[in-house]
Length: 211
Image 1 (cartoon, rainbow, N blue to C red):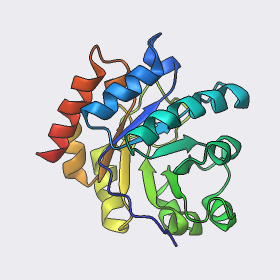
Image 2 (image 1 turned 180 degrees about the vertical axis):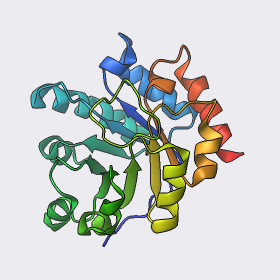
Image 3 (image 1 turned 120 degrees about the horizontal axis):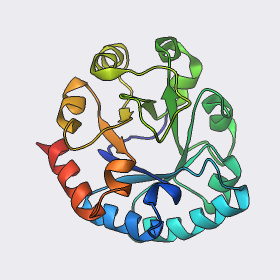
């Protein structure tokens, strides 16, 4: 079974490319100062060496502010930086396998849900939170299967007590309705990474969550 509580409400998914030429560490720090609770480094197009370098830089920052760092789908990077956890999807290494490994036995494991049938599998059982991806289709992640919408979040909420992290074209204009639909946490990329003022963007999103 899952072993970690997941009390976080505003989740930043960041990559260097998403920051549009700005220093991703500066964007991450501004986001933390604005209210981001947890950060995932997602570098799908980077070599493991480059991913590791960025993770080593970012974890210095997240440790400074006591913010958990989650690594997207790279066991080697997550192990080497001693990240707080890892996030995986259907085509990645399985949560069950990860939970059996000594290094991940007590780490945060997030698992993306693309089908309702996944809610009944053993992977969900051992995961600490479920990524509902995407709520609304987005250009930052094109390889998804189901666009859940608000109704999808509500359906999933009725079927599981696991913490639900909603991601996919979430912004200030729809944040409250996504929370009302049953999400426990909002994960954003562009709404903060592409914002003119990432700290202000994070602050406004956090306030919307806390209303």
